[in-house]
Length: 527
View: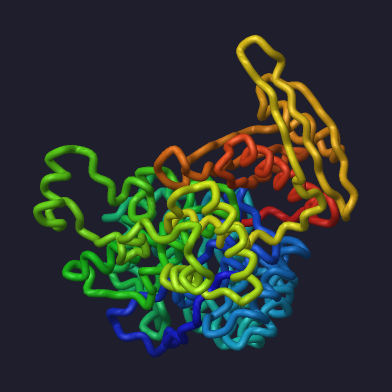
């Protein structure tokens, strides 16, 4: 699978005052986004990408949530080096023991303990008094400290907690041994001025806080997660918890790429920097979209397709005259290739490998062979192959869903005065099955035929088609969302033929559904 050489980061204790620790929670909080759940192999793919991106801390999951989450955290702890690997736990003994077990293989580990502190959570969720909350939190930190010196504490819903009580809880957990204090804006309620003042208040009123790292974890319900995080940095926070593409529960989390590039671009204001290899931002964003099937909106800051596009004549003229007239960042600084056109069907394996490495990927010889074969097949269909095409080939190769069914062939017939029909041939363990079906259109007919062959009935809830590159020879990328007994599953398909891409996407969803049915257990509700 594509990956980059690891870079070893400093420990938080060694960070200079102007260095902001990037705590990535894509694998934990990001996965709570509906449709964004990942299997173990996919989590490992993302963990390797986050390592290449050079994040400081990877929150790998919530081990008590399910056996699958436990195994994923354990796998990340075993296979990823050079990062702090973190696991989440409520202030409960069983949670902390499970997290410690999952994190045991990690060279550098952190247990992240949380306990709700706001009045509404105390009254309606925990049904506990303030002194009980303090006791729970302290006992949880003491237990976690028996497994690792690196313990983080989060007072859930901190932004709606009484400030004096918040200071009381944090002072108590510091005395118990907490080394990082994370201040969550759990429901995205805060505004930047208020949130910055909260951090300043805590710095002045929490006993021993100078011995800890102040962290923030902001949600985007009012669209201010990044702004609140940056306000906290100005006020003295030294760790920001964020996710790739801002993915997460409800409206999402603070977007890693926006936080990092804001700090980099406006260092004159923040006086801070990160360890992030910014040229890996765009490839990591693309990989996550590929794995989950959740595409980035076109006008998304930093990584959206329009982030560096200029259509207005006055903007085009300005950029041609001097890039800085309308661009405050260079596309190549976030990993968007400055050069688009690269290879054709006469290009050899060596040239292909060079281009793959230039795009920031590192792949094995076997993976190169598989990717090169796909490249040659694509080059036979297209006159020019672009960087985006190559990235899509590489990303498709990282998909590790068990392919119970493989597409052998499909044929469709449709017209204004005819009934759309599709004939599909699938392979299962070397045996081929063919069936035909009708539908409202050729794609619907293909899906019906696939359902008849596989016996898997899924409800299609979303269908998206986009061109990977420009021009009439562009590859089409189809993303589908299906419903499996109330569970949302996303999958993608890629081909220069959009009908074939549609079939491949739906078949990938069928295979994903079969993988889930063959043993994926239900987890408990996550914070």
